[in-house]
Amino acid sequence: MEKNTIHIDSKNNFFGAIRSLWSGLMLSLRHITKATKRRQPTYVSDPEYFTQKEGLVTLKYPYEAIPVPDNGRYRLHNEIDDCIVCDLCAKICPVNCIEIESIKATEEIGITSDGTKKRLYAPKFDIDLAKCCYCGLCTTVCPTDCLTMTKVYDFSELDIKNMIYHFTDLTPEQAQEKQELYEKQQAAAAQAKAEALKAKQRS
Amino acid sequence: MLALIICIGVILGVVIALAYAERKVAAFIQDRLGPTEVGPYGMFQAIIDVLKLLQKEDIIPAVADKALFRIAPIIIFAAVLAGFAVVPVSPDIISSGAEVGIFFLLSIVSLDVIGLLMAGWGSNNKYAVLGAMRSVGQIVSYEIPAGLAILSAVMICQSLNLQEISFQQGILLNQFAGLENEKNYLFGLKALNIDVTAVGGITTWNIIRMPFLLVSFIIYYIASLAECNRAPFDIPEAESELVAGFHVEYSGFRFAALFLAEYTMMVLVCLVATILFLGSWNTPLPNIGPLKLATWTTGTPGTIGANLWGFFWLMSKVSVLLLSQIWLRWTYPRMRVDQLMQLCWKILIPASLVMVLLAGIWRLLMI
Image (cartoon, rainbow over all chains, first blue to last red):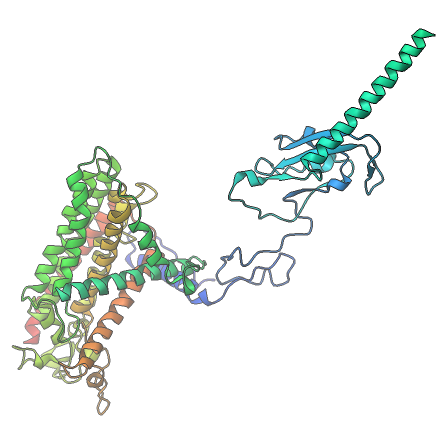
């Protein structure tokens, strides 16, 4: 400890200055001599993590990466099979990065894994991850836990349009077909209602 | 013409290696990896950077003084390159064995200042002018201690011819025309009566022939750092205050030329330091009794072996000096302008004047 402490008491202390300059040179030399060592990209839980005190710290990123924790919360993912298209996530999103359209189904179309009944199709479920602020509010409000944040954090794209993720499982044709089915059912119901009304008036 | 082509080729090679070394040393001092992507260990990074600079657009500011702006990098580079004309590489290879070698070198290299001023003024940018003024002020000031330090070495050698100075510092002393009857004494003191003419090696280097020249060498080394705008004297291009000093408006090839001139200047000042103080192309190994280390590592003048040995020793010494320059750059913070001038005028110049006096006394003792 004493050895490395340099005390310069006056402004014009020539030898003090020389000693200080020399100790600076030796400091950088020590770093050069330790350049053969490299710190390993270990996670903080690794027992070696705090013992790697010397060596180069650069992480050659695409080739090496520090492990992401299992509960890392980065890219959004929607499990569309479990989604009931309730629109809560789109409503709570502070940056409006989620866009949802819905088509009512003519009948019950399935059950999510937690037992909720699905009654809506989602012809459009887009998340613009270029806008996303990773606050995670959408995942907390999701009633069926189908919208989650995953460990994936490196998803750069050359074209910003590719940052919009489409989660829908319907093709536009299928969506069109479902829409028509619904309208047909509505029309049939309206007609039946009108006929019933007419019959009531006649009697 | 051939000498020019070889010279430019060697300089380009050294400069590219130097740019790579600088990045790696900087990285290692800062616990980083440095370039790794281009080629093994990122070796081709410097070459790729040169190619990148060459294909960049050549931008000349609209209201710049176009003639000055265009010519400045050429003048700077030409001035530095011309300095190599008198630098000996081995006992036989020297572009010009001019009798006034070191004098020519000092005067032609100081043309550099005109180029810097032209670049700063021609850019029509106040930061460029400020950078140029700082650069010129610094170089002009530091040429005085550098010149005086060189003068003390020249006084010891009694010659301005760089090749003659080189011959004096080794076992080939008597093979130079005009020096047939000269003798080297240990520490240059005839009174000690230890003849080291045949011992050679480090014992005949100028810093041993006249031990106080070590101080001159340090003065010259510090002044030369300032002359090629190296840290801790890099105020002309203080990136935190001036962005890039006098070359802030330059782009593409012209910037590359300025960059190249700076690194070439580094090589040149290290060559001069080596020739004047560190034994030039002479081997550091002395002849000890039957171990003729100096003779073995010098070769017979006129043969390829001697030329290769000369080139090898000169370049090794220069490389060590260049590495030390890089090491200093990444260790020390930049000096303030007033500190810079104080160091020059209050410390280096008086010290080098004392060295000139001491060199004169030593020369009297040598004869």
